[in-house]
Image (tube, rainbow, N blue to C red):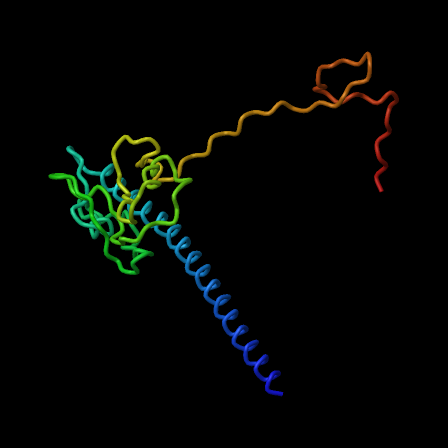
Length: 205
């Protein structure tokens, strides 16, 4: 009996240890997936800020064009008779969980971009858009800098942001023609063929 009890006790300890390892592994996987989702959110939010800054700059009345001197100016641009909104809201940083951002300023011009204040190392190391190719070498999320520069490839287009663009007519497609029997004219018919015999009009019922 004592031998069986000892064996059962050892088996229970092994089962508890194995369960702990499984739970720890599942927790690590969950944390990794959660971090990856936050990275996706950070890319989206950062792009919203970049586009809003581009809208503020490109819609500047007069010359020289200027960047906003605060993020709040993106919510209420008072340079016009009617206040213009370039951003829906000041987004939270998905990584830090607070609506506080590092601001990238150009002296004498204003805020040209934003970045996260998190010092954590990103998981994502590849498959970035060309504009964000340098993110692959980031040491922390602070290196993910979302900057608007005038004239950059794929940059902001004021016209496309302010009003919808008319859709271009789809390219004309060649009309498919049925195969013709040998000896038949290959040109498409423009008039319906007349029947080989007269057709009486339908009687009035």
